[in-house]
Image (cartoon, rainbow, N blue to C red):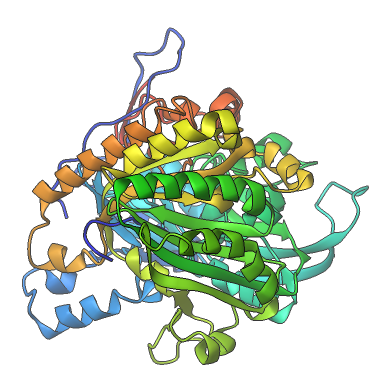
Length: 603
C-alpha cells in the first residue's frame, strides 16, 4: 500500500483528552472516581497478584512490550526476526501485547497492559473481572485485537485476553435458553477468542452452510458482533449482530449471564451493535447459520479517466447504473474513486455464476469501452467465481488462488491459519485519519444523484473515497433488514446503500517504531486532507451516521453518530449492568465524564 492510500479490513505522540459531551447527572456530579496505577500505593501487592493467578487457573502473565527485542538494538538479529514475524497476523494475535494496528495520529499508540489473564475458561474471566473491580483497576478486553480505536490495550491496565477460548461447535437444532417455544434452527456456537476464518472453515468448508461474519480473516468474532458487523455478503445475509441468537457474558458484578431474546433481553439487545467492551466480557456467542449459495466470488476492474470532466461523467454514470442493476442482494464490497481520477472496482458477488456476473456488468463495461478518448482501462474487468463451499477452504485457495491467500508459516501452525492479501495493508497500521459516513439510498434518486456525484467528485480532489456497498442494507431482503432493526446500531444503516470510508495511514509502521521516527508532518497533512474530503462529501448528508468500528477517533456527537435514537436505551442498559463504569472504551456507551485514558471520572 502506498503511503497516501485508503485503509480497508510509541509514546512519541501526546494522548489527547477527548471525550464526548456530558449527559445530565444528579447532584452528586462532583463525585470523583480514580482508578489505580502501578505507581499508586493502592496497587495490588505481589501476594494479591499471586492470588489472582491461582483463581485464574495459573493463567496470569506479566505482559512485556512487543518491541522489547528492539528497545536498545534495532539492528539486532532478534529485532529483525521480530519485524519479520510481525508480518504474520497470527503471530501478532498470539502476543499479549500485540494489536493489529499500532496507533493513530494525536490519539493513541499501542501500549501493553501490566498483567493479562490468558483466559481458557469462563472462571478465568470471572476471576479477572472481580479482581479489577475490587482493586479499582483499568480493565481491557482483547480477542482479535483489531480495534482501530485502540480499545484492545491500555497502559497500566489488567487485560482479559480471550485468545485461547476459540472452540467452534455446530448445531443442527438450536433453541436459546428460556425460549422453549421457539423453533429449533441450525446454528453455530463460537467462543470469544475465535476468529472469522476459522468459524467459516467450520461452518462453510466443513459444514456446507453460511454464517454472517466479517470479511477480514483474523478479526475476532465477539468484537465484530458487538459492533454490528459486516461481511462481504451482508447485502444478502444482513449484519452479523442480526444473526445473534444467544450470548454468554460476564458482567461487572462478576456474574455469568445468558442473554437472548427471552433472558436478559435488554442486555442481549445492547450487545448487538452497542460496541465491544462496554457491557461486560462476552465469552460465547451462538449465531444462526444459513443455506449456502452455489457460488461465491468477486469482480475487479480499474479505469482511469483522462480528464476531470470525464471522471465526473464516470461517477454519475456508475451510480445511475448501480441503482438500476447492482443495488440488490447479489453485490457487496467496494469501489474506490481516487484523487488521480481512477475508478477501481473490487466487489463481491454471491448466488450468480460466472456468466451471470459478467452479464450484470456488460452494459456498463460497454459504455466505458465506447469512449476510449475519455477512459483508459488500466486493469480489465475480471470475474472470479468458485464453489461457495471452497471460498474459505485453505487447500482450495492454495491451489487455485495463490495470489489472494497467505499462510502462517510458523512450525506447527494449523493449515487453516490463512489470511487474504488485502489484510496486509492493515497489519501494523498507523492511522493518519479515518472518516465513515452512511449514504442513504435517497441520494441515488434522479433529483439528488447529480448533487451527490458532484459532492463525491469534490471529495476526491482531497483524498480517495471508498464506498462499501455491503455496509448498507438498502437492497437487502426485508427479513434481514428487520433483524438489523432489532439491534442497537444506528438506524441509518437500514436505508443506506453504502458506507463511505475516507481513510489513510501507513501499514507496517513497526520499523518506524523500532528504529526511526514517524513522519508526523506528512501524517498531519494527510489527516487534514482526509477531513476536507469528508467535509465535501457530507455537504449532501450533513446528519449522516458513522459506523462505530470504522470511524473518526475524534468523532463529534459520537453518541448520535454511532447509535442515533438508540443511544438513550443503550445508556440505560449500561447503567443497569455496569453502574460504576468498570468497562470503559473510548467513545463507548457511558464513557461520558471519563478522561481519555479511562482512569478518572467525575460524575
